[in-house]
Amino acid sequence: MSPNFPTSRLAGGLIFLAASFCPAVMVYASDVTMHTTLGDIEVHLFDEQTPATVANFLKYVNDGSYNGSFIHRSVPGFVIQGGGFTFKDDKAVAIAKNPPIINEPGISNRRGTIAMAKLSDQPNSATNQWFFNLQDNSTNLDNLNGGFTVFGEVTSGMTVVDAIAALKVWNAGAPFGELPLINFTNTGPIRPENLVLLDITQNHSFEINSGLNDAWSNAATRGQGFFVNVFPDIGKIFFAWFTYDTERPDDAVPAVLGEPGHRWLTAFGSYSGNSAELDVEITRGGVFDSALPAPSQVADGTISLEFSDCENGTVSYAIPSINRQGVIPIKRIALDNVALCEQMANGTFTPARRQ
Image (cartoon, rainbow, N blue to C red; front, side, top):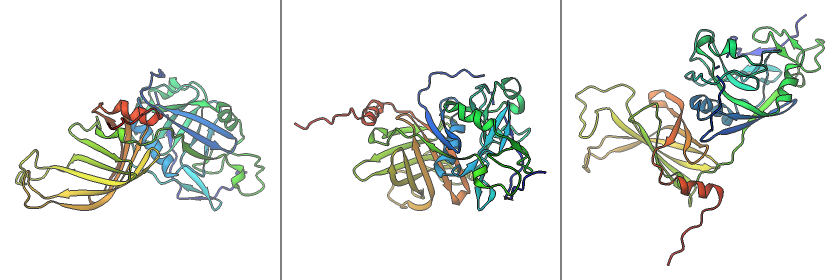
């Protein structure tokens, strides 16, 4: 007999997989802790090698999407998989997915690494599900389906991963045909205490400071940039995004400076720790170097900023008017304030005395 496992909004099955383990010295890095029923797992993330994947994963982490989730697939000697479902009101509920991300293969699926799950024959389909490699799976996972993105590795708690993999596996119906359960006897419905439940938290150490004030960019979208201005006295950040329309306007659209489609938006809001929540304003109208016609600012969406150190961060945006949302990595391009930022971050900055 198979255990009865009620479900709600179940997604289809996903295949996992990623690609030649050769960790380089990292310019910066993020770390997370998975607090599971069987103990904690510390994971070091490869921000430098897989920036889009790490940014996507941390978005789910910091949104709390993974809190109350569970390991829903275990294949002993191969992988354990999670990130797809929470357990609420005695039912499995699919975690809401953000848009799929680009594949970033290049690090091998060795034992102890974490990689993104994705749909079969769709290399750029990873969203919220991930898996731990229980052994060296590089032979079959580094090239299949375009290679699958390894984006971190276990630094502490591999014994917990192995303990999860050692649990008896039950067929609870698709997509839970390989569900690891704790002390389950098949005499009733599956309860929370039978699941390997987990929460994931990012280990924050960096805090936003005015040394971040500078020009930033996303290397994947050349010609677009950002400006960050931190106001520590009031705990606010001003953020400007110099971008372009999603579709090129007609050539008749007037422009005095730059392309007809050149636009920019600004955002302003509060910060705490290493992150900030900002309200977006889009500037429309106006003519270069002229007071008339006056430009206007229109509220339109939100931006979340997160900085892992003085040179790297992520931008999560949602702009309703153009139905666009996403998560992108940003990097400082003006380095004049890096030393100041690092001194402020580690508490060694001493303000100059006025004469």
